[in-house]
Length: 301
Image (cartoon, rainbow, N blue to C red; front, side, top):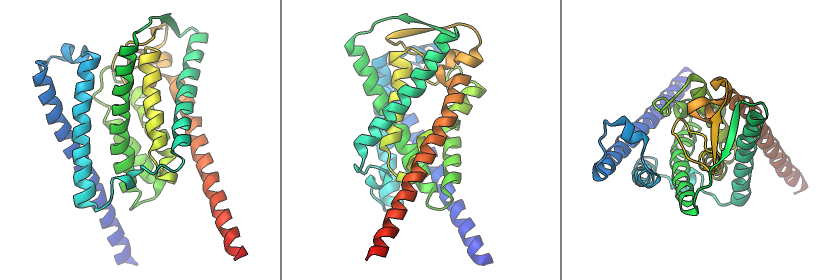
């Protein structure tokens, strides 16, 4: 028994080490590619003002390079080290359309509901600032790449790998913590903002730990960012954004999120917590019903 426990602990330690190595290599590779992109665009690495004011097209170039780096690192680990397919990260098309719809629904409900609440209570005001279809299209493409990158890395690889050696809820907690830590150097970061990013990591992974499917978190992540920034005009995780509307803060930044955006607001916290429980409870009920159906079929044979 003691040897079995020690062997399991050693396996967990090795897998954690592999996940950390994966994240380090991912950071180094995308850092190199982004540095190359900035050099090609003649933007100094140390000029924080220039980095803050990158155009949508420049951000799209950098995110495209990030996507290339992500694909290379994921392929290396998945094929050469794990000896598993990339599809097994969570790209089954079973219930894919439904999962995409639910991701959209959760994003609109949380971001839209929170914004209406902030507006009704006077903590923000909204100004109409129409944008061209070209700009909206580039923004949407940019956030597709952001969602694919972060969900394949953090939910598909990190969470999926950790679930292989530990309790799924512990794996979810660790992956969400890692996800939050990747945002600690964002512009205008706050403690509440990082707390909400952690909760977002829990919400994004809550369905994955039951389904091993990435379509819900990809959809939720995409539409969360898109409605938050290019539509409503909040900063997205601390990065300023220009939307169809413009958010004007009025009052306590703890309530409205201030310069970190909606993710830095207490309203966001209060909406995400029940959303997490709804997703987990829904998936638990689905799992129980599926198990009951299997048992019923076995008895009938």
